[in-house]
Image (cartoon, rainbow, N blue to C red; front, side, top):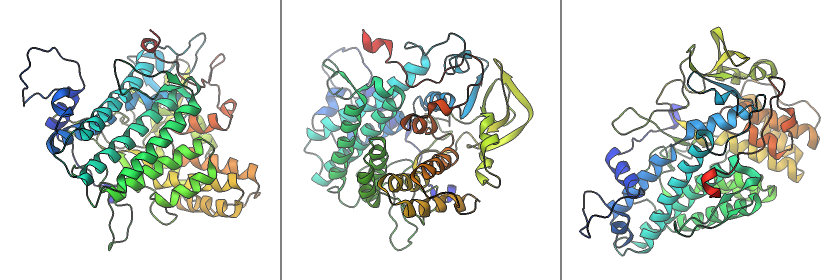
Length: 452
């Protein structure tokens, strides 16, 4: 993976300043302090440095709460167990043990929700500030807008993934007059439109951004004569279009997904790990990968669901995403013998979207639009790239959907997809029930504070 990722470190001071901008503060006087900028100071005639502070804070904030998010979707999707000596709710509430239900006023619901909306607020401030300054060029303006709307769409999509039919708020531009919670279909349409708007801005953003990006320097092509990092407008546009293809299949707009994919970094020939990542570091003000747990640890561990090992095909090299423990781990009547080892240390990057997912989106869209031969070709790229022989099963829509879902399960393991995939195919009843009385949840409740 590291051959295709150049990790740029966040600038801690800039990130902290940008985060400070979105937090409420007491108003002592009307004299602006250049060392502690207020929202008002960046909303009028913001400089490139002001705007870049907001970009840095937005990127840093994207990593907030993602450990809880991945545990939420992974545990409910029976990808892994989260054994915690500090909090039993990972094995009670998330799995529906006995009479347990999902709580609308506890960390696993409120932390991801509020983390995503803090980033959305940063993007809204950036959008407003960019519209109110004459101190940047038009191409720079388009670059900031393309970045902000793309990231805003991604953050809203993550909250919608958790809430599903319960919906989310789309219009939160005015904190004093926020819009209503809208249903899933309306939210997906709005997210798709945000991505389209972002793409239009990026196409007018010139050859380079006015700001650096962390985790976006991976090249979208292996052509040495035409390197195109995601940290350029053209490369970031490909990231935007990759997200748009994901949204299109979530909306069951499969033909649209096929028209979007060529504008993304999708390729049947590029390495699977080419993509965009959250990056982490040990520097002051930086963050560590919250998804990493040491192998054979006790107390706080992530254990692969036993079905991961029992269901995997022989010779599938994705089995290396888990590792057998020296001793089984047990908590609350659940036992597992394999650690999740997708991440090998505390600074490993975490995927936002990779080429392997785009290949699987391409396969799915071809299945759903009737080009089964092309779907098999794409699935064979995944199979042979992961140590399996080419597909020899029936070439029917039903059989290929099963094959596609298997490949998504193992290719995208611990990346937040299995619960989503089985839910959108109405197959949550296929997830194993680990203890009598356990439940498989369809969605998270809207946080309590949103209903008051």
